[in-house]
Every structure is written in C-alpha cells, then in structure tokens.
Amino acid sequence: MTTGREGVDQAVMAGQAVYTRRTLDVYDVVVLGLSNALIWKCPTTRLLDATMNM
Image 1 (spheres, rainbow, N blue to C red):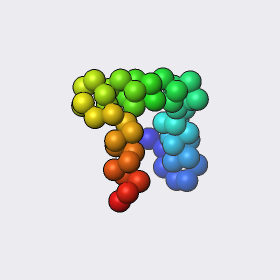
Image 2: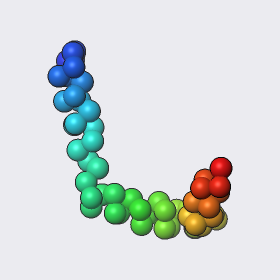
Image 3: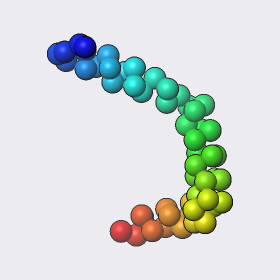
Image 4: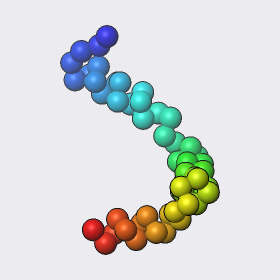
C-alpha cells in the first residue's frame, strides 16, 4: 500500500484510466439510452428534466 500524496495521485490515475472517451460513449448508450427506458421505464429526458428543475 502506498501512502502520501504521490501514492494517492497514482491510485486516482489508475482508477480513472478505464474512463476513456470510448467507454463513456458506450456507457451513455447502454445506461442512458437502454437501461433507463427499458429497465427503469423512465426515459433519460424525464430524468434530466427533473434534475434540471430542482
């Protein structure tokens, strides 16, 4: 286990490495496009409208 600022920075960078533009694009399609509408029966636009009007 690493300690100190440098070790934390390396751990953070390693944890963020999976979030590339491609994986985020796939996430948007799967979660925001399919999961919300088909599984939760709540279109993404409805969720966005609700959060924008808070």
